Image (cartoon, rainbow, N blue to C red; front, side):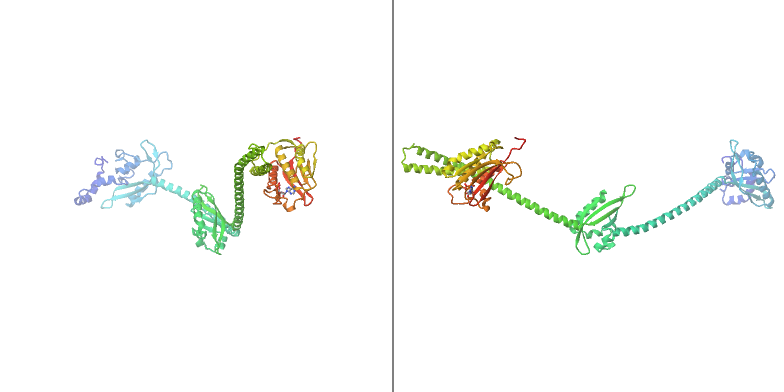
Length: 583
Ligand code: ADP
């Protein structure tokens, strides 16, 4: 553009000058050359001198479009400078352009050429494929003679390429369309499947309505979206009053807060929901239900829905309550028994303490009193007259009787508290029975009774000899005490099963008498302490049998009685026999 003044087309400028001059007068700044140079279309000014068509001027756009310099083309014949592409044998550019220019000269009218392929030689000498849409217009003088031909070309290569792309796009669009059709068909079949699903959903709902549970669903936020028919049958509610948060109003007021807390927890964590709560039925009564729900998740694990059930558990609850009441009663009974046992233990213990304290406080002074009475009897304070001696002897008998009683009480207290120390070793009960019987022989004979002892050579047991002797002495002593006529028999043997405290092997030592016998209803009470059949009887406090039975039990055995009123009694001490291995 910088050189435009040097190469301007003088005839054109001169020709334009007449009209431009007037314009120049009015608007002096108009520069026709500048306008020509800068026009966006490519212009080439040709002389009407066929067949040369000399190039008189070219604007910048034209030079740019053809990649040429003004020096190379101005003044040259058009087809010399722009020949056909020699490597394109089918090139028609030159022929068509010449024909068009001839047409303009003949008709003196503009001629628009069809789309031209007219390749351009680039700076490297290569031809580049280009497409053009040329327009050739005549410039006439006032007589209608052609002064110049303006050859305007539009490079439509890009446009053409754009068109080609568009075509390609269109074909792609067509293909896409066909695909869309296929997709539409696919969608139609999906829809038909869905409608089948909807039908099966209807069936499914029907099934759900028949399940003996309330079935419900909620959205991810826990708002109820569906209840099966049972819910509506039970509550007499409507979807409007049940959906969303409406269902809560049917929960027992005492269960509401607990339910909401639990439900919120599941919604927040996705933990399965499980709760027992009461719902108000249409009858106004509350029924217990077991509520359960599980979250349904999408592929990404996001909860999309909750699926829940509510099962009527009234019957189970009623049974639970009954069982609970029963258990409570049992617990109460056990607690009562414990209390009674504890009270008994306390009484026993305090009685044992009382007896121990009593015996200590009384036994020692009594022992001392007996000691002093003995000294008197021996004459330490001077000789005693006969009446004095008799009195001292009575005093001593009374003291000794009291001491025995105290001793027995102490034994009883110890036995009750399980505080009797046992020294268990092998004891020959046959020998022991003979010894005890012999101890009493004098007394028995003095009472005018006979004594009979029946025992094998040996009858060993594992036991405490002192305690066995104590029990046997007690039984023989009673037999002598309560028998007026007849005999006392001591019989030691392997016990028969009959009458034994428990099944097993026993040694039985029987003390039989021919005394008054014991009425059936008294046969157990005589083993209770302080029980005497004849309260006026001179001897005994009624504790001997009680102590004997307690000690026998501590030895693993028992003392039992058989009796016939008017004929006599048999007291038996049972001791566990030594087993075959032990012998
Ligand atoms: P005690 O003989 O000191 O009274 P026991 O406990 O030894 O106390 O006996 C309790 C009671 O049983 C006696 O008071 C007596 O009534 C009765 N009894 C005990 N042994 C016989 C027996 N062999 N024959 C009849 N009654 C007996």
